Length: 72
Image 1 (cartoon, rainbow, N blue to C red):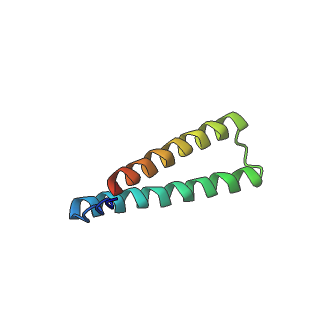
Image 2 (cartoon, rainbow, N blue to C red; image 1 turned 90 degrees about the horizontal axis):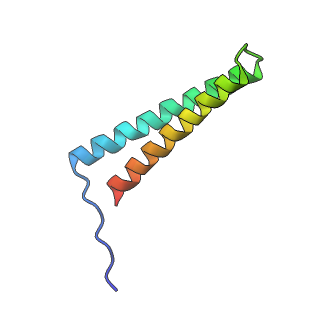
């Protein structure tokens, strides 16, 4: 049984993964801010909050998938 070769760490792959990781960090900060606003009774409608969190979730999934693809 042969082991799968590790992907090469080319400069473009490193840059793309770094950018996706930065985006994930930014999205995490956005989620924390929105959650704190909801806890502090900010006049945010629940439907607006739900839509924002759904968008953030989709963006996180998209970036994680991109990183996984680059690592395969």
